[in-house]
Image (cartoon, rainbow, N blue to C red; front, side, top):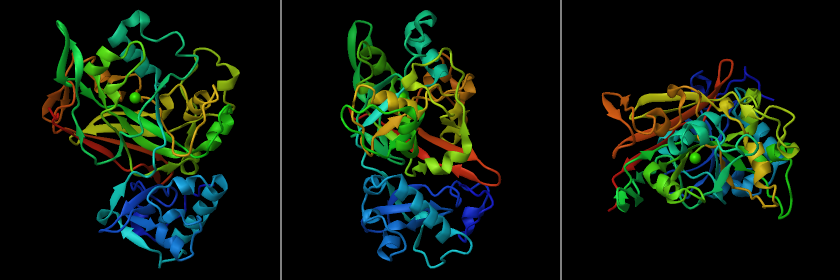
Length: 403
Ligand code: CA
């Protein structure tokens, strides 16, 4: 249970605008100097060194916290997650242990928090699916007939998932020219504002997963930018879906905000157009009241909320396994672009500029798509009473194509 009045002896954690109060305690992997990466938790402007805590006997995760990814800790299951969270809360509270090993976040390098087992990306905002469908296929065929009946997704690549701060090169590829294909640097490079759910338990081949069990299997969430080359996408995506347009890189935030920290912000999602088949029905709200937005070169471009979405991560996970596909600890499930109904709530430039037809202001400049040198930052937080559960930034800068 979250106590909104709880405060920490780490002073910066008590600032109401801080992303990392004692009610949050998101997990990541960090290093300082030339030392090996290990697990940590963000608190205020500091990182609690979990590897050192474990070496001192303050926490017990069977040695997992000394490792360069959280997978071995996560695999120990919800009992361990809850136990460690309760112990960390006690250690960091005002009457806690002031001799804890803390590292200033400003001195640390943040790494990918998990070994990403596999990456699947979904398409669960009805506003986004409709808007993009209009641009690609016209208004009559915008929303495919199955869309309101099941989560649509594709199997992406784990190998191209990178941590916030990693530069991304504009991709080269095939696009449609006036007389057949052209070899080009993408001219319609875009972002996609998403959340990524981190699967925290394994399932077996042939095992279906109920929505309730799927929710129990989710360890937490990261911000996720699914960079997309729209010109490459438009030429390649039929009939099997996006391929190279989405393989140039996917950026995630370094901190995993746990389901436990988000629990007080549980929310209903978008209104349903029709009842779902029983295997996708959920008996309690599966979304969070979570403000999400993005900036370009420091200018705020759009802001929306996770609760505009039509399918929750638990529904997506249940659907992913419905054929018996086994799921693994460290699987990353992208929610799909999160867009509200208006242009200042859109999670992609494709929608915001209506396919590049209406440029938008970015500070003193104009943009239709992303230009070389542009930096896109995602942000997200749930607003509590006197505190907020933040994700920290998820940043990527676009570098010129490698021709
Ligand atoms: Ca996407």
